[in-house]
Image 1 (cartoon, rainbow, N blue to C red):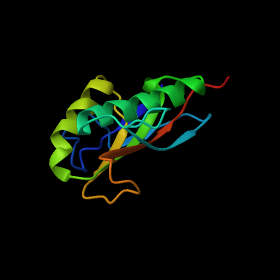
Image 2 (image 1 turned 30 degrees about the vertical axis):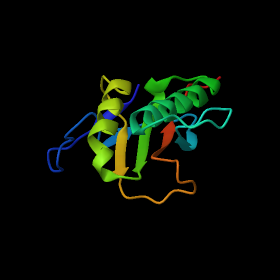
Image 3 (image 1 turned 60 degrees about the vertical axis):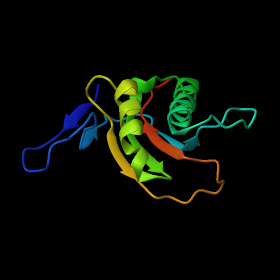
Image 4 (image 1 turned 30 degrees about the horizontal axis):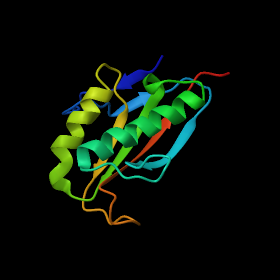
Length: 130
């Protein structure tokens, strides 16, 4: 479905992501940053629980568009504390366990609109046409 692009002339991925991912022509779903809060506006406790819930929210959005997490082609992770990078990366490795991995960027020391937010994840997916 997607073609991972990891040329030898660029530093190879050090984890479960692709430097680039070619998406055949079709639908693109741009997902706003998701945080670890449920539909009742209750925040999950701790960065790992918030990360899992943010990815769950992304999954729900992709599925509502007719796709699955296998259709995610790019993610950007924003962390309040860069010290949480290892824990967040571990969860990302569980969610995206087989190639081709989505292109991925992680940014630390972010100031969020609400102090309870520890992680925010935005994504781009290419769900199949309906």
